[in-house]
Length: 130
Image (cartoon, rainbow, N blue to C red; front, side, top):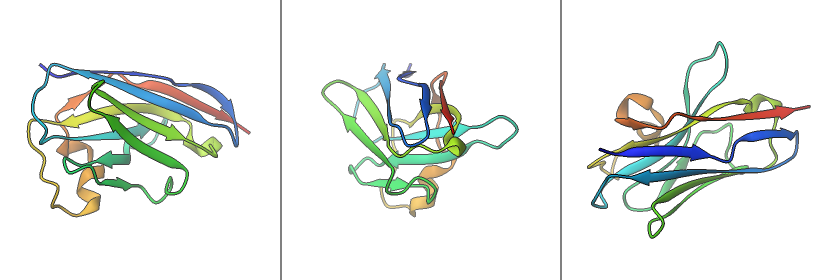
């Protein structure tokens, strides 16, 4: 059973930075994809960033140039470095995995759609004040 546990959330002022971490366990293989999603109160969940099985990445337009997704396979960890944070980035952030297999040949937007992921963490809260 795949388990995902997020950490690193917190409160920060606008312009600040945070690094989210997702500890993954219970899986094998290398054909999976992983992503970060967020949901603000009263809003739908949205895809933020994803990393495909071939290591390539995709980002939502709202975070391009500010957020960076990365993966440490040796440590089974997924990261989201968030810089130049804005109040509109305030949300619960979730780590997700599409396991055991996720093709890397789909269009970028596919990887930012929640229904395409079958394992989810419990989330970590990010609050950005102005």
